[in-house]
Image (cartoon, rainbow, N blue to C red; front, side, top):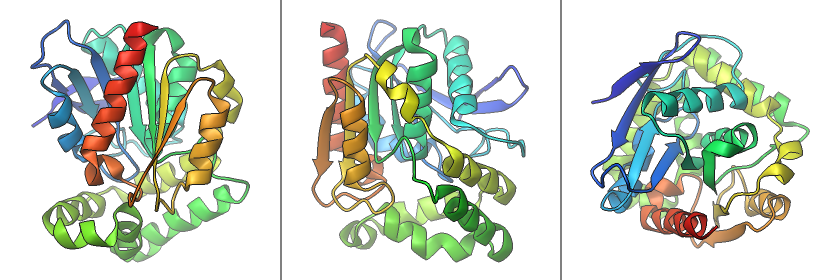
Length: 270
């Protein structure tokens, strides 16, 4: 089940607001990764819910949200989050994002500093490199020309380590279904967004408590990319999760929840 709000350009955003901890509890907004949906955060939400309000949502072009085929940017997705926060009457929040969601979280912190009380950047980067426009467009073209199923083996090996794929097959199968259900034209546009995205110039402006987290075995956004984020954001922390790959909110939710709690604590002390 999901609630819905409509953005200023008419895109419907599906979201879930977990507010069992009460209106005075700390607020955390979480942004998912490419071609998945807000469910990657389910176990993180469960770990936080006793004393934290958590907002999860499907980015435009994903999940149950609207699927306009248009130019996507991290800044547009960040604006969607700002308008969703308006809708749920949140003036500010700790913002966390995984992979694509981490780029959106960076764009949010840069574009809406007064609404960002802390930042958690998970398995992500500010820039995929000079060759990224080509490689990301090639990935989008594979999905378009061969079908999303042609990418499943590649994706699952990137998302999760071998042991997780064996021991948590039901979870992997569920996320594969989410992946296969994508609107391929929106997938192409999101791949273009990631290939073209470059948030490096704005990182020096980020002044809020920030945690950078990466899986030790993340081949999509390797440890070196996390180190670059850590170096660019003054006062940030860097955590490398042993054995983790690219979707650590699902693979290692307790570790991710712990990093979020640390940022909440630092934001209260700031």
